Length: 615
Image (cartoon, rainbow, N blue to C red):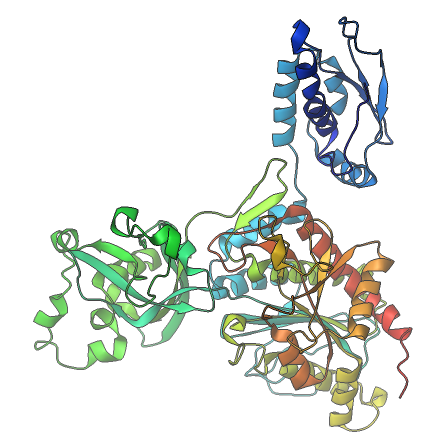
């Protein structure tokens, strides 16, 4: 009797996996001996060597038909050795104690306990924390700003001078080599950069760009709806291309930006996040739509997609009459309601909920920009804690990894000898085309680059060659941009949706995206340079191209590269369920992405220096 392990056997989740696989493979041996009612003993795991070889012992069957096979050495595939070495330190229980487990029940209990204690990468847990705090682009930008401040980055105001020679008191601090700076636009977009210790004006910017927004329903400018069937609804409009059927039957709430009028007449914006579920979009019972499983779920986004806020009778009993403002309209005909929004635009219950959270009066609320958000927390899951289940992975995962890589690359030891600038640009409105003041089609990034270059040039005029425009053009020609947006991992239930030679997998590296029709900005040169940065640090990469019979999405890459002339590569971390209310990705991929981005900052100058393009 031979013990055979398939090349695809699941020996990738730690020492307990080898025992589990052996049990499954030998389970069939029992049926071979049912004719004489002999039940074979399952092999017992004896030891696992440092090289990954696993030793089993077996009690001999006394049926007279089976040959003796004694001790066997099972050599797991190389991929198991790699994952085992990566995760060995994350097991809270010692693997050596497995040899003391003699009964199969004890082994099963021990294995379950050990699987549940597998620690994911620290950066993956940090991403989950960031996701739970960042329900909207406003919150994602605010949390990014707090991380940058903590790392020593200084805020630059767009409405103040950046010139180091300016004597105006209304100016930003001077920009210097080894300096770390950031600028925020519209509270939903942030550009951050650090100047190398050997930076001179005209040196390139090495940029990782991502976006802070995700598809979701947004409250309409007038969100109040007519009472229907005794219920009060909220008017919403879809933002981006979401998988809208996934938003039905979820516990939802609202978050975003609110404009408040202060007692002194100032208008101030504040961020709000209502963490308790307050609205829900209920689906129609199958008894009232018998053909839905055959014809598909095709809701009308105008009539079927309105979240329910409350029942009308309960709202009235609590003092929130939907028509209350009509009674007072004549008595207060001073246009105050039209100038401040108020109950003519939104239901009093929504205003009361916001006022309660912001600790203000409902009358203080002028207007707001609110997203409908899922209240279920982002979390790590999977049998071996290898997945992240969350909304907004597209594209807060890329934003967070870029942010963390920049902070790590801005430390004195890494930045001191760098020639050039390292930067991130986290844009808003990518999901709707990027054409906005805070989007990739806007000016926020290129203006930051120009102003930083000219500010440094004014204090280092002896180092500059040519005029101001020439220095900027030199900078752009030497710059390199990584357009980071999530990629489509191959779906195990829909493998036919991926091209045969381009099937991104979990835990196999950041994906380089290609498209002959320029839906991605990747070229052979930029793909090589990005891959080479990873290769120098021993990090894997993958490739993706869409099938010829399918359409291809796009990113900020083609938009930014066309406007600036900066060499650009489009990349992404593989994920499933993109644009669903709950998406899915691998924890190891967060670690790989962060390391790849850090390798980009550290190696791109060296790689670029070795590239020679013939004229």
